[in-house]
Length: 114
Length: 110
Image 1 (tube, rainbow over the protein chains, first blue to last red):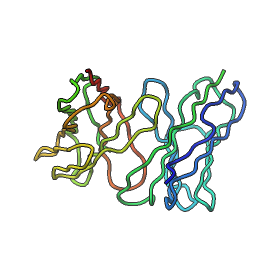
Image 2 (cartoon, rainbow over the protein chains, first blue to last red):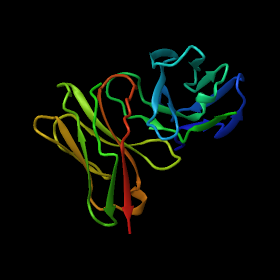
Image 3 (cartoon, rainbow over the protein chains, first blue to last red):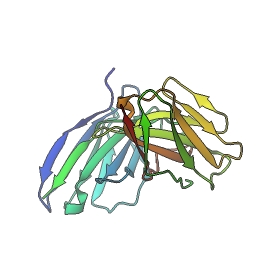
């Protein structure tokens, strides 16, 4: 079975641009979460979506947004990119967004902002 | 979620047991202890979790003290492929928000 797939794997943007990152969860998983990992630090929670509704939001500015589609895939959008947005963006899926959850992470999308 | 404290780095000889400690002195009664690891340039990988009883699976064992204020992850026979950053996370079993700290960088040496 395919794991959590993310695209693109690497991308380079310039300050002020916009980026869209995509995530396909494991088949049967209905919840997707997004994390940002800056070099040298642990991942930081950005969003959780379950059944197409936002179920949790971390301490990130409104430039960050996300959505979940009927097939449970998800997009993370970041507007007006800053140099500090350079990071590994991780998507994780789980069966549900409630109760006991084991998260399965994808390999991430590495964003470099110049 | 309760805060955790882990040593920043540890070494282990290949084939020996790796014992990774974690302190979580402010854990509440219904918070679980989860362990994930992250091998360089990959996403975090789930290892094991527990509430108060010791747990074992094909990857590792989790020993939680009786007062639940600390735990130890045991990799019984460490291999070079176990070199990674290991994160101890304490959380309620609701939602998908994991709070990662700095983790322990485990270096398995031949």
